[in-house]
Amino acid sequence: FRSPRDLKAEGIAVAAYHPGWVRTDMGGAQAAIGVEESAAGLIARLDELTLDRSGGFFMWDGPGIPF
Image (cartoon, rainbow, N blue to C red):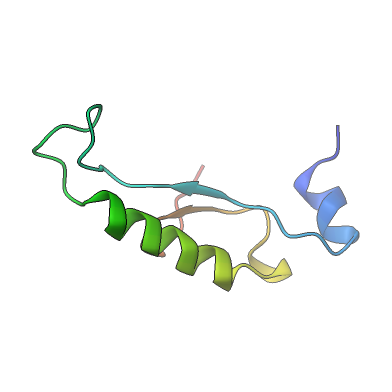
């Protein structure tokens, strides 16, 4: 097992992302966002990932989530 700290030392950034409450069969029609909006946000977050942000947990739209 290699921890996020170990990977960061090797120049590899890792993070976890929450896709949000998405309108899907599981999320239901009352969910806050559509699939396209969630996916676009997640792609933008991945594009922003740096070693400085490595090891974090983030929402699809950017804010960090404490854990």
